[in-house]
Structures are given as C-alpha cells and as structure tokens.
Length: 414
Image (cartoon, rainbow, N blue to C red):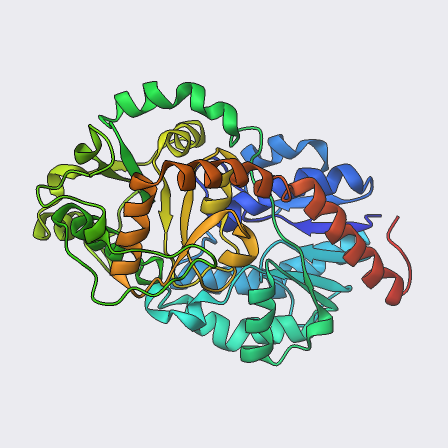
C-alpha cells in the first residue's frame, strides 16, 4: 500500500521546459522525505533516475501542445489513473502539474505553475481551452492547490474564484549543482566557442509574452544612441537614465575602451510561430551584433550567465521565473520586468524595468555598461537572493501541505 503517489509524468531533463524541470528537481527531494511515496513517470529513462520507487505509468505520446496529446492525457487521468491509485491503495495523489482527476479516487493536490493560456492565449492557442474548461474543474475537485508564487495565487482567485486559504504558495528551486558562481571558470572558454566577446544574454523565445522583440529593439536603440522620450524611474532608489546619455553616436560606449563591440546573445531554439526574431534583428540593422546560439546545455548556460554583462528578461508575465533565478545564482546581474512574480523572486537583486517601454529596457542595459558599481552590486546580491530557493526547501513545504490534507481527510500517509 502506498502513502503518497506523486504524478511526475512531465519530468524530463536536460531538454525539458519549466514544468519538466520542476518535476525533475522536486520529486527526488520529495521521495527522500516520504519513504512510502512512489512517483508516476512517463518514460523508463526518467524512472531509472528516480530509482525503484518510480512507476512507468503512461505512454510518452501524451505530450502537451497538441490536441490529440491533450485529449489522451485528460482521458488517462480520468480512467487509468483512478484505477491505478485504487490498485496501489494510495491515500493521496499529488500532481506536479494541473493534471488531475475530476472525480478523485483519493484526496488530490495539484500544482498550478501559471495561467499563461488564459492571460496570453496567443502563446498557447490549444491549451487555452483546457485551462478554461478542464483545469478549473480539476482545481475545484482538489483538496488543496500548490501555486508557484503569490502572483499565481492571485490569478487563481481572479480567474477561478479559488479562495486564497486553499492555495499554498511554494516557491520552486533550481539546479544549484550547476548554476552557481563557480560557473565563471568556464565562462571565457564557452564565450569563445560561441564567438562572443562582451555580451548581454537573453532567451530566444518567440512567444509574445516573453517580450524578446523589445529586447532586440532596446539593443538596437542602445547602439544607435537614440534618446528616450520619457523615462520614469522604475528601480526604487535608482533612476533609469536615457540610453542616449550613455552611448556615443558611433555606437561606442563612453565608459571605457572596448565597450562599443557589445553583443546580444540569445539562447534556446527560436520559434517563428509568433515572432521571427532573426528577421527582426536584420530589419533593425543589428544582425551582425546579435548571436542566436540555439540549444545549449545547462552547463553551457551557466557559463554564459556568468560571463554576461547582464541577463535581460522583461517578460510580461511569469508564474515564477526560473531563468533570472539561475542567472542570479551565477552572479549575473539581471534586468527584469516589474511584473507578476518577478519582483517576488528577484527581490532587491535585480534592475527593474517597465516591460512595455523599450526605452526603459535600453536605458537599463546602458546603465549596466556605464556603471560598474551598479553591476557589481547586482552581481553580489544575486547569489545571496538565489540562496533562498531550493528544491529541498520546496519539498519540505509541499510535504507539510500533503500531510495536512491527508490528516484532514482521514489519516497521515506515513
């Protein structure tokens, strides 16, 4: 008889996205705390990583992002999963995603990472219907909900009417064995391999809410020395000045030699479904200074963070924000949007911008180049801030939630 059955069907590394990385990082820590827990996984490879307490329970073809995969996944959770839980005598089911049962076979707790399909449906055209019609019913059928941030908890109340007391905010962790200040040792070699000198780092994610076109536009403005029309302070005690105050007309930077050859490096596979980022860089005349690096390993990414002037992440919405957390852990200054969960994650260790004001982003990038004391302060505070987040801490908090639910529903699963 199992105590807790953990739905880790999305766990996958190294190429997985945020949800997959969350499951891959959290589940081993949760299994270490719960001796009678088992994890449901979707592939034998992941099962091997989790050891003998992994149960390969579902075909991999039930992937997110396509209609057939979504339909099969929902159907499996309403048919095969309840049967499996009854066969194993499970006392509680914990899902690391929003996937769950409409009529739970035992008390159920689900995880909501974000509500992007509702807030930015253009970026998730198929999933928006799943989040509009299926997820709210799963949430209502659950004994409790885990949210990645206070911002996500507020969204759950706004869109689904979920009372705040039913939602437990548990911040996630990151791969601290990879993302740390020691990554700087490999930064010069990795930068050389990718043809980089001095560079800003960003993601190549073309989804509209990631806001990367404005990063490329801000970079072009920085090089062209275009003054901003209106530039309010967005960073507490620090005033964001015009990019035109910081950059010479020939594209060089006033503060020190060699700054005029700064580049913009974008990591990850560039999707052209919403925005063609390489075409935009060419249109703006900065293609020769913009490098699309494609897929990189976590180790390469850590080195790129450590060697960058700053990581630029002006996302319009995040349920949590793993990339800036990883960057901070590596001692990389971060420029982030003052939106959603990002202030909650980055605290006082980031330079905040209005993500809808391209000149605000350009000015922040200019300040990083022109103010070494500012950059050094952010680089120092980043690792200190990142130290507050770990999968071990998250697992302990989730375990408390699961035990409280199990006790309320008839017995602690130990």
